[in-house]
Figure (cartoon, rainbow, N blue to C red):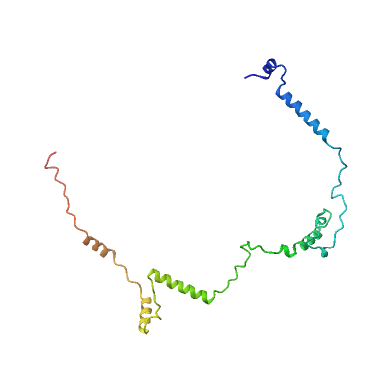
Length: 190
């Protein structure tokens, strides 16, 4: 790898990189300054100017020019009144239909009788499909059936079988395994 001093000795006509970069940057800067037009007179700031003449807020409509109301010296109340007048136009009060949270869901509509009948029918179809066709006590014939349903509802459920009897039934159903007795180790080969 050669150093900058070696470059000069090998190529005396070649300028070092940083010197060339600095020279070219200075040339570019002088060209930019030469191309700049003469400076204009400073433009007065909006805060230094007098407030513009404003049209009456009552006569404003959608096509009016509202830029004058944004001048820094126009009072906040006047600006707000002009904007309120602008945004009260019907073009700004159209719902786009994409707002899903605009409805008042706290007020429920009653379900129509036709829809309720359809829901009851759907419940019956599902019960039939599951094989759970249940008949109400009113559907059964006679008052005896109604009385039997009421007493069945009042009776406590049947007590589960005791665990000892269940264990006895399992033991009876399993075949017995002969006991394997290990051979006596003392008498045989050692």
